[in-house]
Image (cartoon, rainbow, N blue to C red):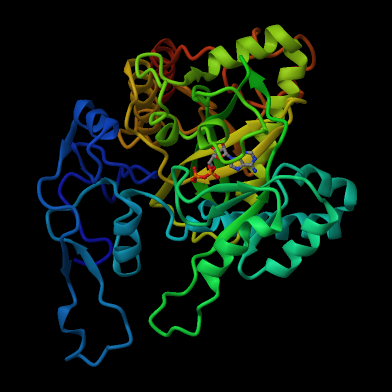
Length: 464
Ligand code: ADP
């Protein structure tokens, strides 16, 4: 099948939807996960699961060798029917993207080289580069807006620079993290160089052994020693961000998320205790006194309310503006590197840590934030989040494409900042609303009512 070939049900030619979306038949999807996303897809009216294996591919140009085109990768397409929407895993995309042909209307999760932002070492490398460029072009003061990621070095490649930095700041705590692992695996804290000597020997020394794999890349990062504490416990905040295009950059921010608390009171006395220092649910749920009913999460609404009561609305708004800045700067740092493809979208899970001055720090960005629910409330959050994501992608073509808010997603950036025009009084104090960014993290999420009104309004706009 060649580009432009007619596929059943897909509107083409005259009257074709310019946004390339299916018009007159069910939407066919594939999903490689067995959790909330599958429930959402299965529950969506007019959507139908494509049966068959995830990874089955058909080689359309199987005979390239005979035809003498060895250097050109074969074009492949899905053998088990054409899907319109694929929530695939990253491995699948890596294996198939380069040889995949996609129709105009197809949507697939992940950009080809998403790891530029989601691998810990690459994220920092890209941020450092944009920071330097900004300082060069706009001055040192502008570079200060990048002071949201802790000092970080890649190991082993930057070991010597790290040692110099280490010696300049005796006594501070560092955290060591494998660059490509997740859920707190392989992480440890240390104060003395001596503490990592043994580790370093084990990891990097016997390179003369030819059977040894290349050493794993780590990042060593300044540990934030003064986290903001609630009830004596440390927490970080999971923020969901949806990128539907890198060029132009178009970014949505979900107003609901959660704070993940550590189960044990914070202290710097026991830096080897992961239950104190790592807030990952995967770690905390193994703590001896973990209560699965209570869990260790607060909604972002609860958190914002708590912080506003304690510090005032303005201070919290300033802190949350810092989160907007983190999101936009980090995405801009890879904007020119990410292979932009109109078929691709990405839902990132940002991990943000507040310090005791309420300054937000970027800890890491996940391309596959967990969609497995840890309880009823968590399920409701994720169910709404993912349904609203499908509403934003709008394969049903029910919206106008000009919306600034869809369910719980607020449009934060579209080739420039988006400004709020429907101020939420709880979060937006009186003043010049034109300077207020369209960002409502932790604000009331009345998504169902908003969607009802939105679809009614979009219908009447489309009729006229
Ligand atoms: P992973 O991908 O394994 O989850 P993270 O970088 O997210 O690795 O770190 C795991 C946890 O460790 C974070 O959720 C946070 O609680 C804590 N942490 C990580 N880096 C720092 C840091 N620089 N300062 C303070 N705490 C940190």
